[in-house]
Image 1 (spheres, helix red, strand yellow):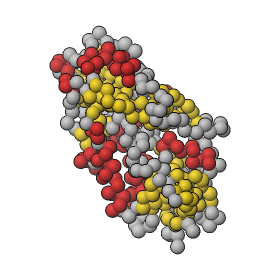
Image 2 (cartoon, one colour; image 1 turned 90 degrees about the vertical axis):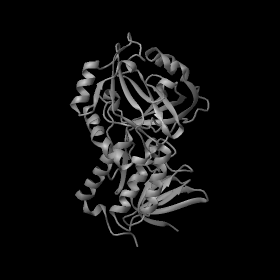
Image 3 (cartoon, one colour; image 1 turned 30 degrees about the horizontal axis):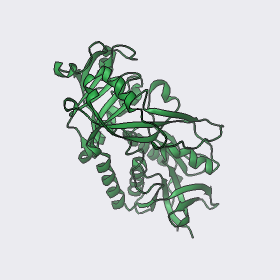
Image 4 (cartoon, helix red, strand yellow; image 1 turned 45 degrees about the vertical axis):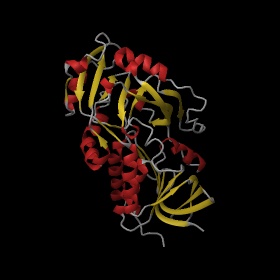
Length: 383
């Protein structure tokens, strides 16, 4: 027997849950199902990230990404107010050597997108090595609590009538010959089968795994096995978030869900990388835990402390490991566009990938536009 639904979302991360709620509310009483491979929702990349609510500063080499972040920042903060930590000051420091932008260029860039920026006061500039840092700016950027955000989104999808299915690994998609997509799933009690009018692949780093198993065209994507260190920051940094840019530098940010700071380093956070190339053989997901992988924290902290000496007094607690996925072209300009492929390889099968959490608004906009442009996209519910 097959369970029937109007839309099936593969992937129970933030993107999958937000889209599921949006579709359920947009389509009224029509049935929406979320299938998540893991035992819990929003426990993968939605948790293991810097928890930064971007306001555009991070992307001086991609004005479009910066501008879209600036536009979405107030909307995301307002929508998820109870999940936002705005109790700290956020500093952006520009390295004196090796940076791809100068301090003057960075300030003019922030002003051009309307992002608040001013020179940091002397007491904060004094935290940095004056020989290695050209200047330091006080900006406006927040962090989100991933645990609180998960609770909010789970509550929202339940109120919208979305059915959540954890512990379900989607194995293959096939047309059923009657206008629906047959979805074969490994469940906790064996094989399950769903018939869905629409399927949305929101599996982030596992997009091509689903496509390959279903003999659908592979999408070129670059993946990194990334380590995010969690630290207890020394007292002078407790209420600060700091990014030294722009190039092979680092960020330390409050990580609200653990009451710690995160530490990432452009050079040492990636431990491995691989690319899914169109026409190539799919190589599958690499190991995504610390098992067999030595932490690069000693290298991260040693280099970061050259620019911010007091950071050397941090206490390392643990690391989070996750596969980070981007479009290959983003390597050149550090852009973070969404990927939206409607009807990819199969009628009513749609692929969605966002590079950061506020990309969800662009993704929903594109999906709504696809619905408006193609009325048959929303059809009567399956009997």
